[in-house]
Amino acid sequence: MQKKPEGDKLMSGAKFDEMNAGDTAVREHYQSYQRWLVRQPDAVMQARRAEAEMIFRRVGITFAVYGDKDDGNSETGGTERLIPFDLIPRIIPAHEWATMERGLVQRVTALNRFIHDVYHDQEIIKAGVVPAEQIFQNAQFRPEMMGVDVPGNIYSHISGIDIVRAPNAQGEGEYYVLEDNLRVPSGVSYMLEDRKMMMRLFPDLFSENRVAPVAHYPDLLLETLRDNSPAHRAEPTVVVLTPGMYNSAYFEHAFLAQQMGVELVEGQDLFVKDNFVYMRTTRGPKRVDVIYRRVDDDFLDPLAFRPTSTLGCAGLLNVYRSGNVALCNAIGTGVADDKSIYPYVPKMIEFYLGEKPILKNVPTYMCRNADDLAYTLANLKDLVVKEVHGAGGYGMLVGPASTQAEIEDFRKAVLANPAGYIAQPTLSLSTCPTYVESGIAPRHIDLRPFVLSGKTVQMVPGGLTRVALKDGSLVVNSSQGGGTKDTWVLEDDNYSTSQTQTQSQSGQSQSQSQGGSK
Image (tube, rainbow, N blue to C red; front, top):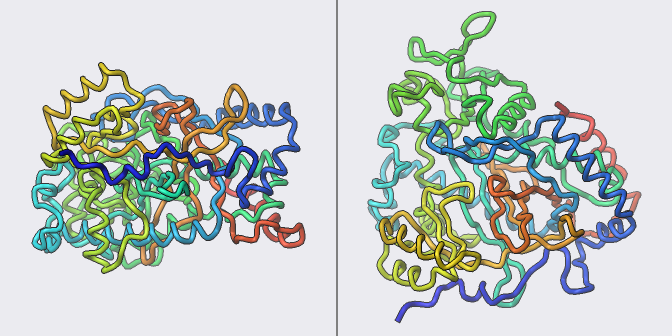
């Protein structure tokens, strides 16, 4: 008999809305916002939507829809368009964020321990916790990194951990980690710009609600990058390496370089001499200590990886292996964010930290295992099936939303390469009220907090909330038509904040909205 999925308790058909607890009840942490929202004329909100679109278009906040992903970077795309921005924020109470933050620190710490172990003593393999073939046959495993020591043993300096919420057996919303993004996670610029936009359009909201700030993220990012510098210099030189203006996330690359006050460079701007990396400047060569790279491993060094690449710097790997330059994130981090490794992360936390996971995984079936494959094939119409190397919402089947023909085509693909797929229950992702053409309606959302690992592990409160704008859709990816929302983490659980209590927060909000503009 085929086994029942552990996730059945999550698939009971129950729904969880972030704002509304029922037809008339509004959750306590949303009540202040709800009182404000009902006072807003529809014409005013429509005007604010139009204003936001105009400003985003003028500033150039765009995203390119994914195209051929084998052209230098997993972020690469084609047609540029605006990412739709929704005016209704996603609000997280302080106590929920505190738990999530602890879980994120725990998870990223264990993942960094795992990557270091993979490229050194491989204790987790020897202990039989993770099968050797899951690592050595992984397309993201880089044998060139074996025995290479990196500053602080940190490999994923910038991690984007995708969090979803779904109703548990009691019908309450529970947070789950859906995916770990450890190579070149994108989206943080939209988190920052969404907050700036909300402050510009609705400054009164930030005097009525104690919303934790996020504008200091570029400062934390620069601090993290400098923390990982191999050079013993007071002011290490940091650069952002971009594949160029045709990359789908180029706006973000330029934005973060500008916000940190560092140079944005392409591969042609860098060269290696005497086992150090230099960038060309109008005043002559300047040594580079830290490269925040937004280029995939295969394209970083044509002498070591793909010889036809023009996006990287020849000789970079040798300099890196010698410890004369830091790469953030490190080469080879992809071995830990592969979807076939994801099911082992809870065991990693116990193995390296001796702790129980604070944040749960979504129950996952690895089609490389015969029992899991049999269950998956028998239940394709009920499951979400993903390619282990897929990204951007591509290479996946959402069974309940697929036609019989699409299911059968996917069945053939899974049978042809079982090890290339995993399956998960179709979670009823939490919804949040969202402005759509017909008015305000619930739409499914997720959350990507950005975790920074330097001398300490830190993050700004919140992250990027992505929203599936199509009715009933569970795919929130920007490349698949998703939009974004501002994410509010409340600074405390006193939801009846008075004007007197919020004066200092209001002043802080105003200073944030005036600073850091492009």
